[in-house]
Amino acid sequence: MTEFITEEMTLNMGPQHPSTHGVLRFQLTSDGEVIHSVKPDVGYLHRSIEKIAEKVTYHGFMPYTDRVDYVAAMNSNFAWALTVEKLGGYQVPERAEYLRVIAAELNRISSHLIMLGVMAMDIGAVTPFPYFLRERETINDLLEELCGARLTYNYIRIGGVSSDLPDGFRDRALRFLDHFEPIIDEFNRLITYNEIFVNRLANIVIIPREQAIAWALVGPNLRASGVKWDLRKDEPYSIYPQVEFDIPVGKGEVGTVGDCFDRFIVRVDEMRESSKIIRQCLDKMPEGEIQSKLPRQLKPPKGEVYVRSESARGEMGYYLVSNGGLNPERVKIRTGSFSAMAIMEEVSKGIMIADMVALISSLDVIAPEIDR
Amino acid sequence: MNEKNILEKVMAEFPGVAFELIEENTDHPYLVIPAERTAGICRFLRDDPDLRLDALSNLSSVDEGEILTVVYHLFSYEHRHYSVLKVRVPRGAPDVPTVQTVWPGAGWFEREAYDLMGINFMGHNDLRRIMLPDDWVGHPLRKDWVEQEEYHGMGTSRNEPMDVLPLADAPEKEKQSD
Image (cartoon, rainbow over all chains, first blue to last red; front, side, top):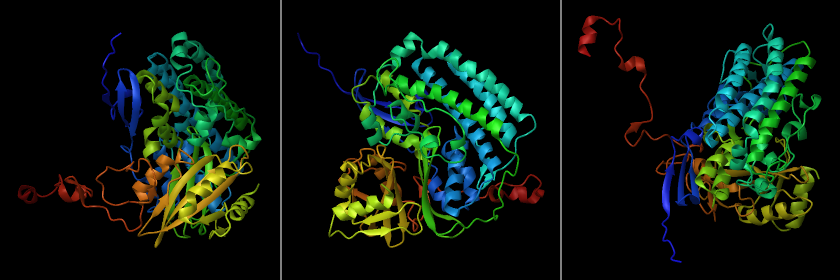
């Protein structure tokens, strides 16, 4: 047998590439289809949000948090509000807490819909994407009724929310959920258990539990690796202790725990749980105020807090240092996509280029959240 | 174990090291540790069976004037407790040993702190800028950073549109002179 002489090839993927989910660049070296190394190049969407935070007021930073993760902006709003409230000890009326959770969970569903649809499309199944987008449109309509915006909401305020439910919102939301829950089963019939789809994802890029923890993976990515950890349940905030829901974890249903399929199915199951949460909130929601009385210019006391909350892409942590003045002294935003991107370099050695596309979408990275 | 006990255990484990335990003005009590001991202390925090702080939840950097501070928020998935460490280094020589060898996920966090705050993580295997272009000048999250006036011929500030565009309803004479 004569040996083939093969050469390493350097490939550039992105910054404008359909499966890079925003603007990302990868520098691949590969031997044919097999990847030897991947160097992610991020920063194309760096808008210096952390520097801006030092120049604006506490209330004034809220619209910027939308831009940290514009696919799940409610969750970023929520995280910032929780952080400042903890630092200043500000109270939130109970009705506002319910409104926040309803908005955040609706947004979580719409974010997961995007992720699942895009992932199916990256694998080569284009049909599901418009179906997922159709459902997301309804959620956008609901959120638009609630706050007037469809993408960057600026709905949650420090100490409450900006507006109460419009007339008939409850019925429309329930009608949507009645329609949506059977749709999840339809999705599963359409794509999840499709044989080609399963073959493309099962046993592909397995991230074991220890590796996921050491690389600081969070949220659905961590749960897919079998770690049962959800901040809504394990470190409850807002009114999450008063609602019942389960935490889906990766079970290795068709392959091994922590493979791409687990990262997909965990999010499918999470949509069901979010739907459950929204139903309970709509039922239990008390009447009352939606915003506590706070001064127009907030001056939280000197000090620092680190508050984590569960965004659609996992733990979103705000480290806030206050000097007692009108502007924050320092804000550091820890996001799920950042560490998900960091692990790419490690886990994509020796896989096929096509599997890397599956890996990127299964980690659900959103470029603005990496770059901030 | 509560957070204070964890930090006290660390202090007992490393006698003779200048620690400072601070509980005021913070939601998590924290321990200020000398920079040169960072890696050893972090390894102990990760490996001790009672502590098992197996995840670096967040790594931030703060500009405090004469000193720059690196903040480590650690978390244990096994025992479900937190711990916070701080390392203070002089502005002129911000050298901190990397903790990449303890928690591999620290690699990118440290690159970010290097890029934006100019902390030099010694022993890091890939300490390059991450957000900004490689030829960017300075570290923007430092309080004394001044934005450069232009970058590769592109201005970093913009004129007020009303100053440069002629108004549609301006008198004829002015329009011609433009």
